[in-house]
Image (tube, rainbow over all chains, first blue to last red):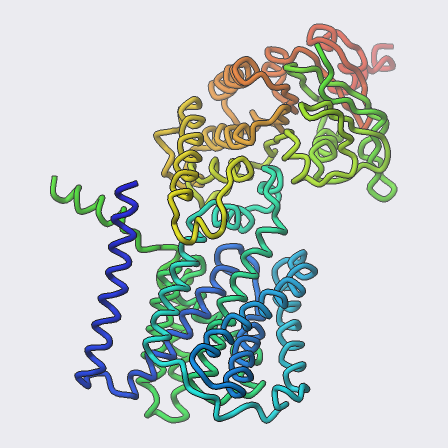
Length: 316
Length: 264
């Protein structure tokens, strides 16, 4: 019990130290607004990819509809904060986005999660398209022209805190009774059923939690960029989130962090290359996939108990 | 002895093919029963019917469990497992990328409660439940001498040990009936002998009913108290091992008929 407490304190301090470090660098001017923008984008991508990794990597359900749930969060925040711009409403809008995304995920998940592999991918892709087309045709969302001048409440500190919260929730979820049940569905559904695991329930649980985190990322995205259109949340967005998950390692949360940061930095570094940018970016992806097909980290996770055990061994 | 499972005129058709036809059998409490028959006799289909992987075309499966008498006819595999019927598979189905310990912990999922809030906030309740589950799993692994391998990935275990782990995992669900689908398949004589002792130990120490499918006759004759013989989907014979050994219909199904014309 005491050891567990120690690890939690260490993780918490790491998060606080990271926060102070970043803020100092911003204050001193080493991180300019250009780099800060990169950090925010990376942060939002981490939240998105962590949620998708829970669905794809841990429960083994191939979903291509993540951007749909992101759109729900984005529009919830855009609509609510445009009407009544204050900080309280911004956080309220995040919660509203989460609730709507959860309801949508249940409606989408109950029929589609009976499907497997490619079929599920196509079904979730269709569901995300439906969400996008609904937004495209509603008056309250301002249709295809999208929403602009959304008040800016999401700054770097807010995104940082949200990344931390999402990571804590998903990492702790994965390392619990629920996480093991979800992994058993990925490993062998028939065997899981033979042990009395309610496979449909746990698949849905992972799907719903993934959708909720996507909504949070959508809210942050809308509030930070201040402009959104339905086309931001098409199939390409879902795929680019999937790329982060696959590149980092399907089923590795640490890998998702690494991949989101690596891709974010590559993307920023290539800004000056113009049209060549996407070619180099794609080439980098192909090379990583050729030489490391399981993703950068495979299923490796950072684990404090393991690190401490190794240190102790080295000492003795 | 009291009856724990009663199967009445069970039929399963796949299109025009009758894989299981009019099979009736009873399992008594704490009994060790074997189900034998040539390849394609419908043994695994019968297993799948009993464990809810597929549902019967007609007939009845009645379970007299601790919680009263229940019909298993239209129950899902998950429901049946939760009622107290556990199984292993002909082709090992371990969670091969997870550790030995995790394999057993997953089987304990429904016996312990951990709320979503408690686990994501890491409340003391979470640690308490995790600790209890770990202890229960390790205790079980220790009985089967697998505690040393607890942190290994299931896929890295030797074949015989994988079979044993699959049985431990099924036992972790606290079943009243354990179905073993060809547990000795691919084992050498030494491993088979170990398995034989293991199954006897399970029957004795865990007080459960065991139904096993097996081709290895030495194992079956050594272990079983009652044998059912299945051929081409229907029940050919039933009885004690010595009765079955002398049953001419069984010998015919396994070895073929003596050719009278050749003698003349």
